[in-house]
Length: 260
Image 1 (tube, rainbow, N blue to C red):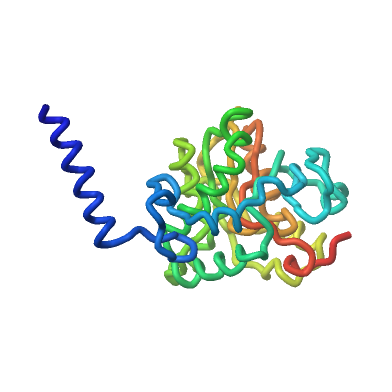
Image 2: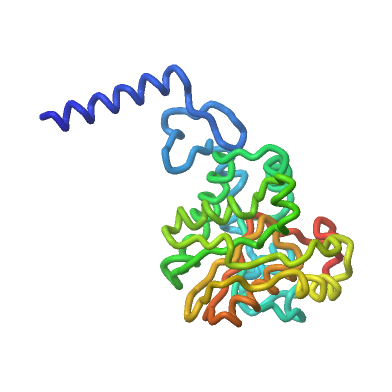
């Protein structure tokens, strides 16, 4: 009886709060209708449809959207000549069509609700590749250099990775890797130079990953050079499988490179 009264009180209180402060979409900030409001995914139907690429063909190896006509794990015209150390790539959508603006917005103005919404959208569309088919064991982010942390710059990648680990209910290891130096920016470098540059930027931390499926996270996957370097280090530490995860996949002009 007491529990029933307590549940009724909580429900009534939640309804009153929603009436006074209607829940809003984490992406567009529009007021959510009662049938759209869900503790699981605070996203309106319009944004849910706009940011749903689940039916788009993509390369399962590198995550590219524009270089395949049907899903394939064997590579595409973009990555078939590249030596990528990660085993598969999962991206929510292309670095355009709204995702670019959202990521740039987050870099300037961190919003936990928006990060959570993007991660949950990604998992809604690709959960099977991280749980049912080959369950992931641990999540690691592409690390910032200590100078960036000292300057107080928001580490978007670490927050995305932590949220992903929370949703998957697996370990999050923020210090599994280190960035050894700042180095020249990847953007603007030729394709092969990006791989060579990335290979000198990172080193392994104290953790070991014997026989683990590791999820390596970045905000945007462009050529795959950074995440491939990270995957190489993780496999040297014993990882049996590395999945590269990013919110967006930059290609063509957005990547600063022409597709070959």
